Amino acid sequence: MSMKFDIQPASNPTPEKDRVAKLVDPGFGRVFTDHMAIVRYNQAKGGWFEARVEARANFQMDPAGAVLHYAQEIFEGLKAYKRDDGGVNLFRPDANARRFKDSADRMAMAQLPEDVFIEAVEQVVRIDRAWMPGGEGSLYLRPFMIASETFLGVKPSSEYIFAVIASPVGSYFKGGPAPVSIWVSENYTRAAVGGTGAVKCGGNYAASLRAQAEAIQHGCDQVVFLDAVERRYIEELGGMNVFFVFDDGSLSTPPLGTILPGITRDSIIALAKDAGKTVREEPYSLDQWRKDSASGKLKEAFACGTAAVISPIGKVRSVSGDFEISGGAAGPVAMGLRKQLVDIQYGRTNDPHNWIRKVF
Image (cartoon, rainbow, N blue to C red):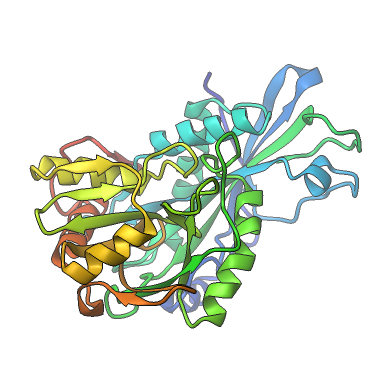
């Protein structure tokens, strides 16, 4: 299914000097571009209709809107990257579109066709290309869908709004990736088998905030969750997947099922295998992590996700004691993979898996 988007440019876009000033240090997710894409869904009208690109504006919503009561809401995160020749790349938007569909399915929401998802993202990048930061900055794209039916009964909504907004973002790390410290959450779990851990719904993130606050209280940057059944195995961070690097050159990462199938995670597995490394997707316990760090068997640990790409993990803190990984420094495997991935995203090197989609 393809849809033609009705393009209605903003009548009073941000003046150029204001835009340039905002792009100097945009931070993350605080500055927004002039436009948004919107597609509506109504079961009675036969599905998706009214695809538009228009000036970014507030939604008007009834207080009985389903999303406000039963949290039928999903989202994605991806970036557009400016190439040295002035063109713009998207990185694996088809994978985001597919995951968005899977999330919708799990949350009993209407499934948006993948080509409509990609077209909406591209249209926003095209109309707001002047908002692309230079250097290691990028345009962060946030496609999302909310249940908009006015009804207080507990059932899947019959109406939805799909939208894409965009936010210019600077480099996640000022002065290069610094190793992060993480707190092991032993009171809270993120997801259980049969739950919503593998989908990107807002409720997952809301449920992780208390544990993240606990991490900050203990002087850590991020929280890491253990499995919900045995409370032994590492699952993922508050918003990122995790990898372990061993002295034999192999890598290990927690298996899919209860965790988010990260697109950065999937890309790292592919690049590591290209380099001839063994990558295992298997459970890894906190006890083993501690032992392997002490013995030197574990050389590196790092987290990965769209926002930061790769963050080395330097220190792990928990109720049962703290430990450091490789003296708390960023390791060569994490940094090498990070450079390779970023170079593909910005079009500075060849793209062996055809991950790049050129918008222009």
